[in-house]
Image 1 (spheres, one colour):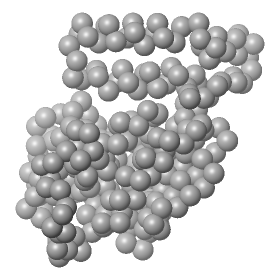
Image 2 (cartoon, one colour):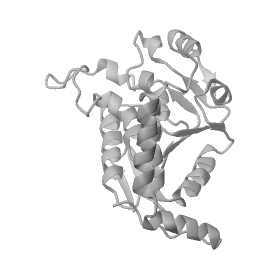
Image 3 (cartoon, helix red, strand yellow):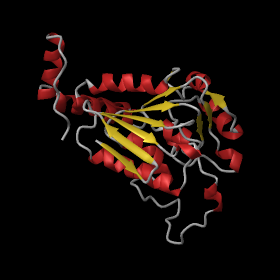
Image 4 (cartoon, rainbow, N blue to C red):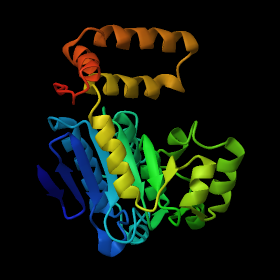
Amino acid sequence: MSITIKDRVSIELADNGVAQVRFVRSEKMNALDHDMFDSIIEAGHKLHEMDGVRVVVLSGEGKAFCAGLDLSNFARTPDPDEPALTERTHGNANRPQQVAMQWRKIGVPVIAALHGVCFGGGMQIASGADIRIAHPDTRMAIMEMKWGLVPDMGGYALWRGLVRDDVLRELVYTNREFSGAEAKELGLATYVDDNPHERATEIANLIANKNPHAIRAAKRLHAGMVERETDAILLEESIEQHAIMRTKNQVEAVMSEMEKRAPQFEDVA
């Protein structure tokens, strides 16, 4: 399955359930214009509805993952009917926040492959992924203060647990640029690799070969780990495990390991 949305985002779903999602506005370094925002959100909706998706690999074509906000946005006259940023148009988020937050909300793991440039809104989108693989020379920055703004695409929610508080403050206040190699030391990248897309796909293929019900349950547990109290976390673990144990996929996971063969899982309905 292969689709392209407004010449901004493409989705290719492989037979093993790995969905390759690419930003394809390469002539503008995948900068975020009005159509890019809409296309990324539409891609999230399509992935949610698509049968057989087990893992998402998120990347950018051309010279960059995403250069952040397209500067033409500063000159654009807002439509008078556009919702205010304070309105919650996508559950707990507004439209720009949903562009980054939806990767945490989607039911399957998301792995971002970062190269070239990852600035501003691009940095916040990448932070929405479960795992980030960066080329060591990737140019990265929490860029918004350069334009007299604050990060407002979900960054503060997404950076909890990733970056030490004082380090995050310095990156936000100064908007200084850092490399993919430094990003790993700071907590903003999981691994560095000279071929981040290949590494991301290798990890995705490994995850796609696990019980999809258990993977989705694990992502739900991770989502609540920071915000819930210990008692609630313990109960939620038990609820998720009770729902999985002795199901067809869980039994298949055990049998395939014991028989040393590839598992044959049923996808989540």
